[in-house]
Length: 467
Image 1: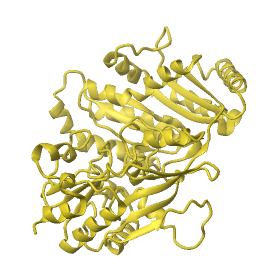
Image 2 (image 1 turned 120 degrees about the horizontal axis):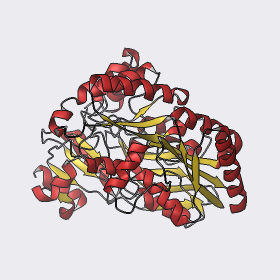
Image 3 (image 1 turned 135 degrees about the horizontal axis):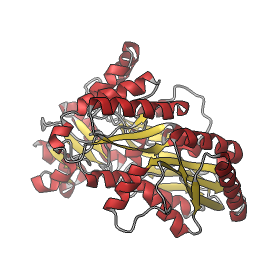
Image 4 (image 1 turned 180 degrees about the vertical axis):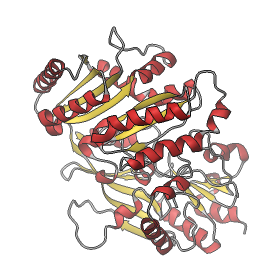
């Protein structure tokens, strides 16, 4: 029996893809920077099937690359070009297994699309707060494997903070059932956190027990124009002092980001009559009333304008207006893609250092790469910036991308100098594996290698990623 016949006996003939056209979409990453090869794409429908596939991979020393929605930005779900690997797609494992409103939990399989988990919670008057631009295609397993962040980290935390328990198929093929819906469980090492953020290099997440929250009674969305990132940070501090946990979103983007959105998306435009250097998109979620939330926002904005931190502001008067304001932020990445090839960064620095980091890094980049255009936006409230670099106008894209290693080194050295990280929420994957080793201590790297060797001694789990 050949390789594919063995896999067909596990998942069924129609769920083992080997035809070149059928396989092709799975082998290219979302940004089309990496193209790999695989023996086949296998689509299991249950944890038991995943276990049998991985057991066979361990017996035959076959690499296995897990994939969710294939929306990653660092090549973490793309196989190498050896053609030896099995690409294991979890898209058929998309069930919501349970919703427990009284316990504020939701249990979903790894292939469940993020927006479906949000809707399942909402049907029970609960909020699952993980939210990001790719939520219509990104999956729960992928979100956990990269410890995704998104726009509400400030209030609810990263994917790690939203996960109570996991079900994982280990590199041996054994199943670890850690789907505990407990907020307190002090009975040993925290195995759950080993697999969150590990990008499938230690095991394959097949299901997760996730936290939900009561739906807020009211939300207020406002777009505020500011003169500088320093003013935006002062506004953030004041907003947190005034609003506490009511503050659920605090996003910032430059005027150039807004210009790109307006240029590439018809109907999208600034609500202001004048241009401003930066904008803050602020969201309050209140459990009291709409009047209370609106009054809180208006008092905050009035004070900020009087203090000089805010030039002007607009408060959404309807759900449609709120969505329109959010679209100005959420379309930035796609607008930059429409503008042309670019070099993305997903860095984090201490919140207090953001303004100085951007100011100094902007100068360095212009000195070393004259004419580059900075597309700076991100989750200001948690210190995560997408500090992206677009080429000078008229520059050949291929020539510009040849400078990627040098641009990476400039930005990542700066982030490291500020006590920051070269990856806040996108992961390491293939893209940043070598870069990551430059900034980790030997002690830290050896600890990671020790964990990898202990759990995956055959080295079959998503090889070539992270370490």
